[in-house]
Structures are given as structure tokens and as C-alpha cells.
Image 1 (cartoon, rainbow, N blue to C red):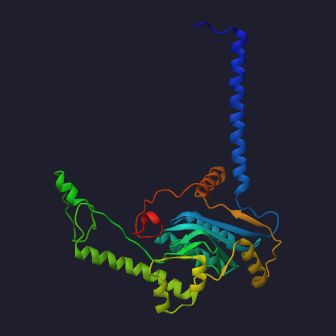
Image 2: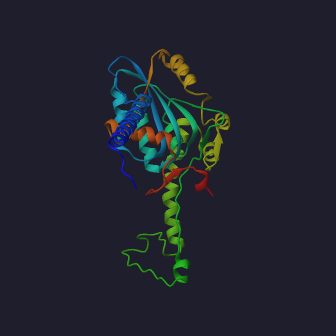
Image 3: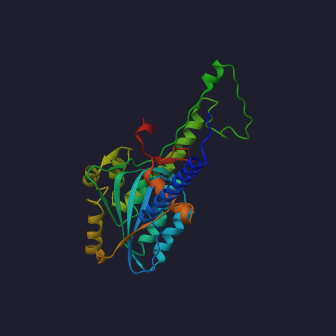
Length: 303
């Protein structure tokens, strides 16, 4: 093969350098766009209404709870619009988020806006708000908790694999994928699910002013459209952020002209945290891999 002459070789090297430079510029532009879209919440230029996004899987997050506490203590924050778009998460995650939001709501008004989906632990979080709005086509509800397991004992027996366990007690490390679910284990797990469900039910009764019979009728695990949820008393009105700001102005005197600023709740701080939060808002929720009980709704996970 003929070798390139020096001039053509220099031209090719210049072209490669040019491509590398443009790639670097494109990456910088992408990062800048992300930063503009979801810049960290900094109040150094006057009053703000915080727009707190809760998307994807809801888990226990100390950093998120500290951020919410900072919003509570920041005098520049006049109100919070809670934007929920999540199928739920862990029961502990929903409980922790609810408690943080209630602490915030005791100091300044909080209004929740339900997006495409705000079910299970996400609806538990919405219960912490002073006012809840949803779109007519929003999917919400799925009030309850879930424990799922599977066992492969028949499959293991078929392929000639036998599992053994030495336990300190009959219910230790049960249920197990290696053994059939027996009645004592089933009863023990049902007790755990029922006790956690009572927590969700109590919050529903307290926050939506429902008696137990009415709450039980709504908390059977079903999902509702936003319109159905309003008719059932699970949300207060139909609308989005514009209606939320109008309610804040009317009910709490927070002028609609006060600008809103997004709050980033990624686990990592700084640039990486900002980029990570932006990606989580734009990509589907990651595969569920949770310890403990879950309060989540997703068509592929529902029977």
C-alpha cells in the first residue's frame, strides 16, 4: 500500500484534531445545557419558590432530607412546589420523605403537583403537602405495601440440586428461594405487611380527613386517574404548576411573580450530582432491586 505524502498526512492530523475539538465542545455544551436546566438551588439573589422534583425510585436518602431541611430553614424560600412523577419505592423511603416534607410544611406552604404517575410511596409523599393537584390523566393511588418472593425448589429438585440451611430459629432467613413457603412464614410476613400498611392507612386518614371505612375502601391497592382521585377526595383539584402558584397566591399570599428555581436532589454534590440528577429525570427508572417492603406501582410488577 502506498504511503501518504507529508502534506496529506498533515491534513489528516489536522482533521483529527478538529474532530476531537468539536467533540469536546459538544460535551461542554451538553453539560452547560444540563446545568441550565437543573441548576443547583442557590438563594443569593432574592426570594424564590422552590420547585422540588421527586422522580424515579423513592428510597431513603439522608442527603435529600438535609436538602429539604435547608429549604425549611432558608428565609429566601417562600413556598415549595413539590413535583412528583414516580411509581413509588421502598416503604421506608416513602415514610422518610413524608416526614421531611411535613417538617417543611410546618414552616412554609407546600403544594404538590402530580405528574404522569404518582403512586404508592409517591402518593404518600403527596399526603405531606397542604394542597394536592393532579392532571385529569395522572395515575395515582396504589395505596398499600407489597412483599414478593419466589421459590425454585421444584426446579432445583429436577436438576438434582439440594439446598440445606441450619437456622437458629424456624423463621430465620425465611422466606427462602430454596424452600416452599410454609404457613408460619406466610403468617409472619403477612403480619409485617399489615403493620406497614397500617402506617400508610393512618397517614391517609389524617391528611385527607377520612374515616377508617372510607380510607379502607380507597386503599385496596387500585390506581386512580387524577379525575377519579379528585372525586374520591385523594387530591384537591385538577391542574398543574400554574394552578399551584395561583393557590399559593390566594391561600398564602405568595406572589406569582416570585420566580421558581429547581432543586437538585442527586446523591452526589457538585457537577457530577447535577448531571446525574438530570439523567435520572430523563431516563426510565432503574430496575427494582430493593431490600425490605416496597410501596410501588408499575404494570409489569402488578398481578
